[in-house]
Image 1 (tube, helix red, strand yellow):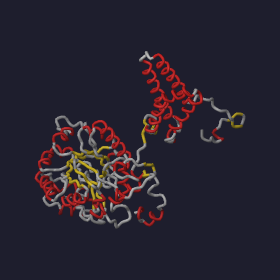
Image 2 (cartoon, one colour):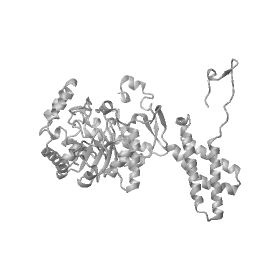
Image 3 (tube, helix red, strand yellow):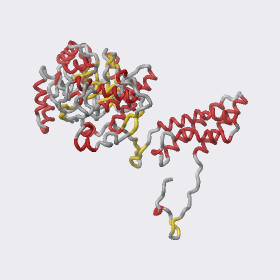
Image 4 (tube, one colour):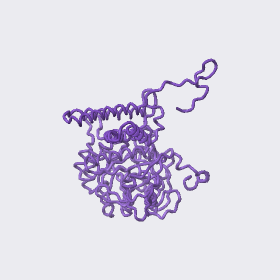
Length: 516
């Protein structure tokens, strides 16, 4: 009980009373009694050896005790302040009770049978999400963004030169776990080829200006020159031109002719329409992307919808699918045959979906949930499906945090749009910006800061973490003692809302470093 103000105490005869509430039985005593009954049943069964139902009865009692105490702990007013060590302290207290009350032989037997339920209690208490009451009829859980967490160094460090940042997608092994977003201001044929050469990956949008116009450069010039007020109408006009299948085939052929990995992106509708042409053109990877993707889509009667399982099975090209933010959907996409799953709804720098639609989950929580689905699916099927954190990633530190939350790679847009080779002329805009019905993106000015090589491999010429992204990742891995990405996914993560502001008063005031 916390301290109670004198004004809140009941008053009798003008003076506050000091009456104490009646004592209630502690839940551990009740659990101890229940486990004592379990012990008696097991010993009795061991002596008789003939009653087969006793182990079942005792096992059910164990489970009931564990579930009851876990639920009791979660209902307490101070449940949100419980520390991770609380279950261990409860187990230790229960162990002490058994050792004090029983003779040594009996105590050893009791502890043997109680160890499993107590350990289960500890695990259940640690994993159980904290429910927050939003209203009388709705409880919610807390979710965390990338800016709200920090990575904790352990007892070992590794020289960054011996760290291994390789990962694989669709049979392609890449040194840099970075994918350039399928946006018209980020990736064109030349950028896709250069990213492949540097050890990363770029994805071309087959519904963008590259496949609507023979020469997209005059169109890109108009997008860069238009004012803020005229931007959306211009985008709707420019993107009203139809997508041409011959240009899809040509762009894929040009990337492959330049020695690049031909990765292309399409919405589910475009994948249904152009999937066969994409495969015939020799694409290496297909990314099926929308604001939200699921394996169960209810459409208007008579309209054909995309069967993701059939697409993954029959296309002959590895298919990455996104986007999603929950454990359940990620698991469904993996079971449908996805070669990778993209995670993130609305965190991108140029995306306005969260404001327009009100949907999304902060990226740290979303990635951790989907990574859990990946691990469970690997145990279920033996197949490992990479998880790609897509959106909300600007600096090397953001990349490190995403991987620590469980991602295998990240998809970024604005950091690549700042490259001198990027087609956006220093601007960056979202994929849903040109929607003729409900635009969900905007154009932002990111400027031009250096070449693709400088941004990915360095050496950095800026102090804000937006260049030499691979170097930042490897240095962080070394600091955290992670030799490869799998070990990086196991480092300790803490909630730290002040991580980016603590002690940075001068940087913020002078707009330097982390204060830009």
